[in-house]
Image 1 (cartoon, helix red, strand yellow):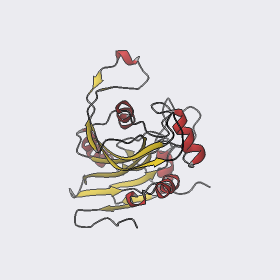
Image 2 (tube, rainbow, N blue to C red):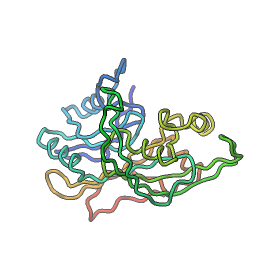
Image 3 (tube, rainbow, N blue to C red):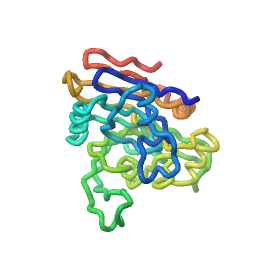
Image 4 (cartoon, rainbow, N blue to C red):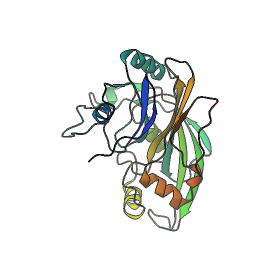
Length: 255
């Protein structure tokens, strides 16, 4: 039996959940023979219709918000389209990433409908910050030791695979990224560290509630494999926790 989705916040207008890694949000041309989707699972769990207002890539885990009626869907959709939603991600990357940097490489869309050369390059901006790093006494590449970093990413635009492509282009691919990363490091984390997945998680969303107008801050904990990895690498102090708050109610702190 499939476990219920973790509900981070719910009121009469919207609901926020933790999307598991590897789960498609909804049916699409790329779905193939898939039979399970986040939209359907959440609808069945709540017993009511829900309306998607943004997206997460299939391999990315983390917080997603859905509207519970068409009017709220329109307002939330406008907030995302107009870049009035603050997003926070955590990523494990190869190498010792920069302390703080603004990446503004323009990106071509990757929708598969036309050759990339025919797609226009669109503005894409991501702010990144290194939270921690580690050097392991293991030779994965050509060096005798291997360095990895925990990066915080805050995308200011919403291009497809934006964080993955920006970090890869900067020289710090996300571990587990089969398309933009490096296979030997991906295999090392899968086989030796128990993380056979993209190590990218959407851990925070902040936006004005579409009805009350109050700022709503949503925080999402990592799944079990990423939590265990953080603890193993000495990064437990950076673990987010599940929660939702208005500005006058602080989120709990991980211990």
